[in-house]
Length: 457
Image 1 (cartoon, rainbow, N blue to C red):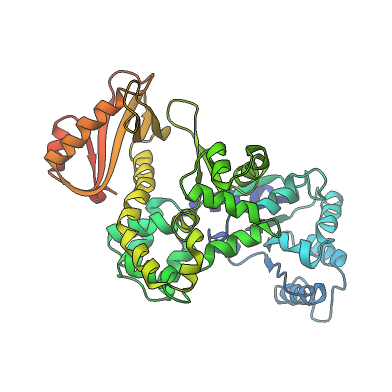
Image 2 (tube, rainbow, N blue to C red; image 1 turned 90 degrees about the vertical axis):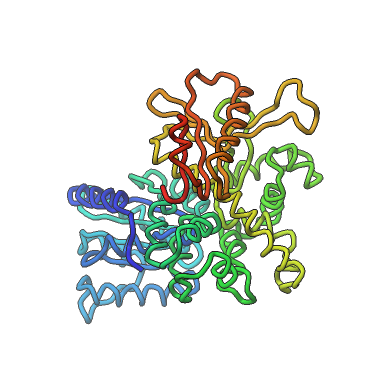
């Protein structure tokens, strides 16, 4: 599969490479597994530099021998030379190779050669005015942050720049979808489950799933017995959390079950709020697995799971894991029947991203709140998106449906009514709708509204 749309990151790496010709530069590149860090770095290193993968399953001696062979293959070591210690290894790298050096999954040194960060720190301090570039990458976001941001760690203060590699944007995934011969609707469904993580799209190519429906692809990669990603969420999180995982999983299960505040999470788990505050904060700020979403206006926010696949997992599978592991026919049939509803919910993510780019929105948020004086059970409202750009405020509704112009007009009328419940919105609001398909879209636009469907994506 071709390398797609990391131009901004490549440009940033090349700029740093230029700076490193004058002075030693150390940068940290991190992001969740499957986001494409290794592919980006191999693209950057083409024809230059050294790439070392830190394999935690090797002994220090075996890993050093592997690295020695890489150095020989790249002309950094002579055939009869050897490096017999990590100190000597770093000295040679800095002394003989002023090009880029990548340590992939750098945090694994804590398991295989825990002295390595200290050795690297000493040599960085001794050689800071020499040319050279070290790129230290990792998938375990919490441990990478600790390595470089904790004042007690050897490399604290030595990293000149941290780069968090985000998932691919929707437009890039649409390009991947074209390469996989997926219909646009099927790709949007896939994006709602797998997000912008390139590895899952590579797997579609590996397993010859191009041209299939989203349901067939999800079945093959996630739901079928022994599917390649059947335990993907657990594998990612177990590495991230290490031995302290129990309560983290419980909190994610609570959020996946619809509990989006500290008080409701505590109630779901039958625990006092004070017992959860630290772990919720760590899930948000340290591990970056959840986020606190705030509305366009108002202060009361909601916790949600950031990673689409983990959100799917904890909403629909985790609490029924025994049924999933045994592939209980009743459970699997029920889950497959839910997919159309799930696609409708996940479409909101794609629609919000599409509008943010299409309208160049500086803000693009959901809005929710209470309706004053309404009877209980009908006293709340939700708006899929309110956004701002160029002094104008936009209000949108999303529908994973095929609509005609009359149906779209009815939805927009209801949206205008809901907007009256939002305090502080300026006059002259622009109302719009994004749907799977709108027949008579031009008619809706002619009435003064914005209207988009998948054709516009």
